[in-house]
Amino acid sequence: MTSTVQQILSKAVDGQRLTFDEGVALFECKNLHALGQTAHAVTQRLHPEPYRTYNIDRNINYTNVCAAVCDFCAFYRKPGDAEAYVLPREELYQKIDETLALGGDQILMQGGMHPSLKLEWYEELLRDLKTRYPKLNLHAFSPPEIWHFHKINKLPLKEVLQRLKDAGMGSLPGGGGEILVDRVRKELTKGKALTDDWLEVNRVWHQLGGRSTCTMMFGHIETIPERIEHLDRLRQLQDETGGFTAFICWTMQPGHKMGHFPQVSSFEYLRTQAIARLYLDNIPNIQSSWVTQGAKIGQLALLYGANDMGSLMIEENVVASAGTVHYLTLEQIKNSIREAGYIPRQRNVFYEYIDTAC
Image 1 (tube, one colour):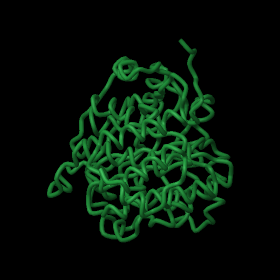
Image 2 (tube, rainbow, N blue to C red):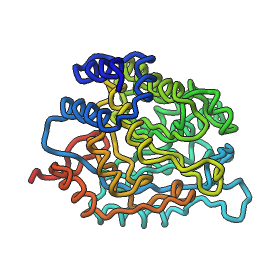
Image 3 (tube, rainbow, N blue to C red):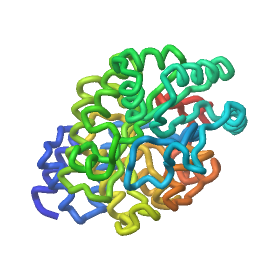
């Protein structure tokens, strides 16, 4: 490990902000243990409590119809395809009832960019669910979906978000972030929100008092400087609004759509998450991605910058469509936290504890 990298790591531990070039330089460090130790030290400073958290929710894909084309997505279908669907309301109720029975407090509701569903359809859906389940948080619609609503309805973005909020949307998930660099987005996707669009949806949502998560899917065509550019854009917006509650990164799952890409290693996942913890000094929480990495690496992520094990994931369709099949029970999640030396606590999307401390 070079003296330059040592100085950067010391700077991060002391709580000083890293520069773009310092973020890039950290990817030259092959000493994974040193990166992990430093990221863990920063996490301990931010979260000195003896708890590490998880939540219980369900990822409900209300439709798989999407007007965009993403090279990495094996889930979406075009309008008119035999496998295209919009979930009937009764099926939504059944999925939510099952989630509540397992102790869940929210649903993560995302779909594709459906070309014919108007804003009124989404408002009616939210009102119906909020009336039927008043205590349920609706963590709903990714920024690209919101941008799509704004475009096809020809309405100001602020009006779209305010109407959805008034109808019952509780928080905004960070899906569709991938890499927030237009070179990458234009090469991987067609008909989808670009970088400034994705960020603007979050900016306006935060200005309306909303909270959201942010994400990064890496390990495809992006360069290392582009990974840092992605983190830098998130950090800049967080400086401006303070509206992000958590960051989650995961590796692209090659599956059958991008099988020519090699599977990204666990080493690279842990290294990237650790560097993200060091760089994102203003985003309080980092989630482990055991869904893509499996139980052991997901647990190890708690020592590489994560303070949260994410969701029980009662249902997950998008990553599963690409061939990833990692599943954990609630007790396995709790045991993973215990084995890492912490007390498991259930939290909501705002990182408030919703259980009783042991």
